[in-house]
Length: 203
Image (cartoon, rainbow, N blue to C red; front, side, top):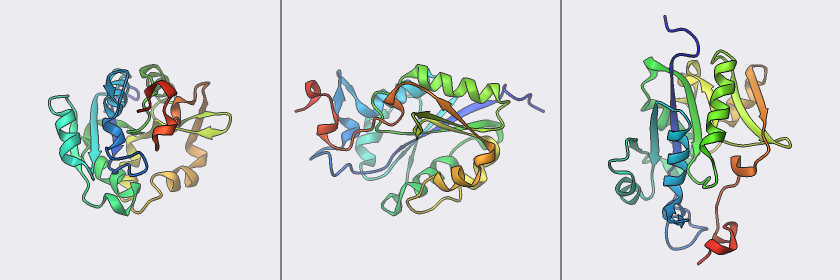
């Protein structure tokens, strides 16, 4: 039997939507400091210590696939993406190597300021807790990403549907949840519109 803390951390990055509020092109392909937004997130997650990464696409499958080709991630297309984020998370979890998965790290694809250091910190707390508790970062009471679930939650995550995502699990598993206070808004600093970007990055 694998000792706690020695198994794989596998990531699901959610990038299914068309980002209609952002403008004519998908925000995930928008470059910040010369790097597409989605690649910045993938870089942070992979450099943060995960063993395998699944990226869930949807509306712009062809463009995202072209962007990530040869990048060492597994791409999964969710045809049901319009029904809500829960369907995309379930699709991503289904694509994991569940037999070797000790932790499931979930992250949104539109957090361009996320750092590998933040990912490492959350993973570190998860391992300190013997990989048995859900770990959620927060800033002044506000939760963000990435969130890590013990691998034992894979079946429950794989049954998610609709638009709620994993919120229902977080609410029902409060006794098995550890919140980690951090000091950077990068955990929830997403981009929905071009006005969410720093002035220097706007078109």
